[in-house]
Length: 306
Image 1 (tube, rainbow, N blue to C red):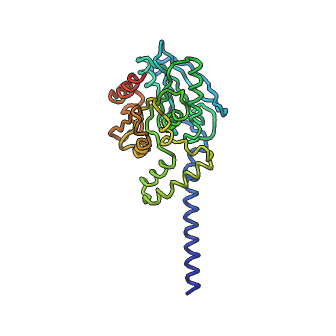
Image 2: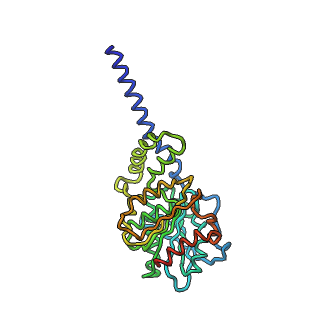
Image 3: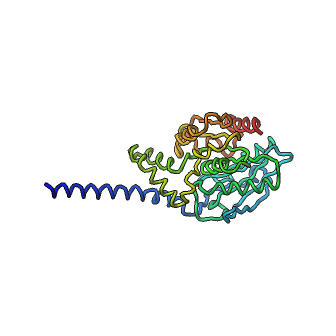
């Protein structure tokens, strides 16, 4: 009997140890294959197709990345938009339609390709833990070129994460617009695990292992660099965070977590959850004028605060 108890204890230990090992290895296996490389977009877009004459730039971040960027200037601008693309989609060049319509309303634009994407240098995607430095490079350039002019970061997907994190870190950034941002990589990982058919308990248990993985990967001191924590630092600066109710790539649960983290005393952070499953919210992202409700939401926000 004593030997059987010992065997049961040993077997239980082996099973539990194996389970923990699998849980710990899964984030490395799933995430590493996505981020440990340069992201080359299959499709990019030319500003000429929107009739835009832009100035190509090369920005250098404080940690040495060379970023491809393009500037669209207007006369007597109200503010400058800094556009940022996604993890695997969209490329920042998908924002030319936004830049075109906003130019008509007096907003200049700076499109920045995030590190390790497209024409920018790098072989490592940082999941928002360092992309805020890309926003900072654009912010510093614009503040030197146009001192006193407001700067608003406008990002989609990973670019939305970078925009929110930058707003939390850099008081000189005057506002933020975000589309389809995840609340944290651990949240997104857990959500996708659950919606792929895994038990809820497994998805919940996996999150700490994902956080541990990103902490080892990008530094424990950076563990607070996610939107649901950085939104608390926006203060009185305006923000517009948008999400589709049935987003299949980044669950709307992510926006709801950010909403829950936003201080109740703040009334300058606006949230828009739109019916539908478009990850980028707009029905025609490339040509936002074809979606009056979407572009109207953005213009109302901008003209209210800027």
